[in-house]
Length: 159
Image (cartoon, rainbow, N blue to C red; front, side, top):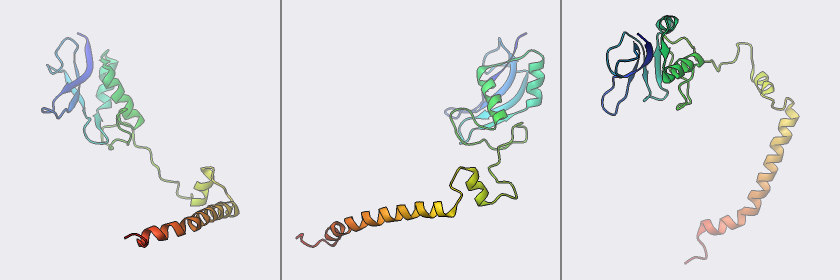
């Protein structure tokens, strides 16, 4: 008997929810299964993927072949990201192996350390000169545009 790890649909009409199952490769998609080893709900954003990695590894060790979709779901859980459709990290689950990456800075890090690590200018003079240049440009542009705006906004001359 050739065992496959594949998806079985269990959701209602227009509400697909999938179970990850170990089943005989000759049985129909929604037919008899040997064991349920996870679930996949693509509807929420991010998608919900819950896999029992211990049981999946058990079946793979005994020769079960995962389908392409199940292989992608396993990789997504390992990376901590949902399948290609969604960009946000999945909700953490008790049975998922991968933990979402933390965006928090180390306890001793400061904003200056983060700015220098990102390649921003380190000196305050460089930041001030860039900000001053931007202010001068915007001030001259707004001074040129001021007379035209005053005539249009007051409504004088129309009538």
